[in-house]
Every structure is written in C-alpha cells, then in structure tokens.
Length: 106
Image (cartoon, rainbow, N blue to C red; front, side, top):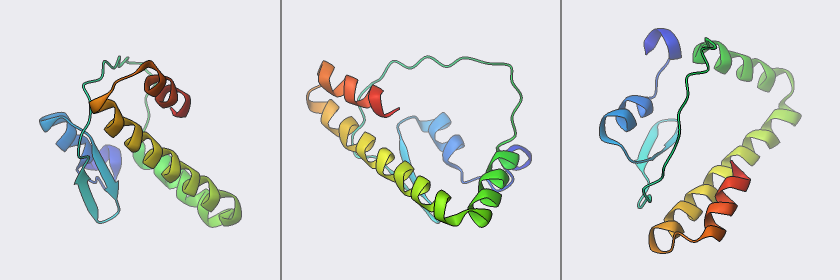
C-alpha cells in the first residue's frame, strides 16, 4: 500500500478487514454510525492506476488553480456528507426514494 498510495491513510485496509464505512479527514478516521447493507458490484477494469500519481495530480492542480479547485473540494465534501446522511436514513427506511437520491449523488 505504501508503494501504491505513497502515504496511505489506513482506511482501505480497515474497511477491507472489518467492513463498514469510514469517514476520513486528514489526521482523523471515524466510523459512520449506521450503514445499511448495500449490494455493490466491483469490477476490475484492468486499467492500472497509481493513487500516489493521482493524488499528486490533484495537489498540483490545487496549487496551480486554487480558486477553481477549492470550491470543487468543498463540493466533494458536501456530496460526501449528504451521502452519509442518506445512508443513515436508509438504516431505518431503505425506500426507493433514498436509493434514488444516493444514486443521483454518486
């Protein structure tokens, strides 16, 4: 993971080992309170990628275009928080409306 990620957070290993969902903010990892059981399909695209290279690219863009990138990162955070709220609501009532809202966000 050190080679692929460069500076791994530990989130991938934790979720792979124990399941569930985690919120990662630099320096802080916390478990989401309640996450419904979801059916997710993972596929191998066979397209090699390096998280380390991708993260470096985002950092370079952030340094070069802060007025563009900072609002994008703020939007990503807002989407993540909205998804978290929907996931929590789904544990009590996994309605089609909630699935549709989640799908629209992701």
